[in-house]
Length: 130
Image (tube, rainbow, N blue to C red):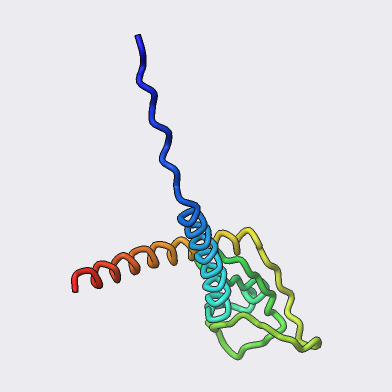
């Protein structure tokens, strides 16, 4: 009694493997850039002076926390921005959660990956149909 030999698994061309790696790396880079841009463009609503002690930036997962209690506002609620300063006298205590940044970068990278795949597929379909 002989059993049929299973066929060897199909080999993925090296070019396709490297293309996938470049695509994943590109999506992660885009995700990191989007995560940073969201933090710098985001305005966080603060309802009281007590909330200025811990202002959190980042979306969907906040990964930067700043103590902006040194700034005094005339009234509340107030929209505050991430304070980026190169001036040594105006330092704002800032904590970073690199795990939160990585999670945001992965999330936004996945969005970029899906949008890229859908967009490229649609463009090729439109080009083929013409």
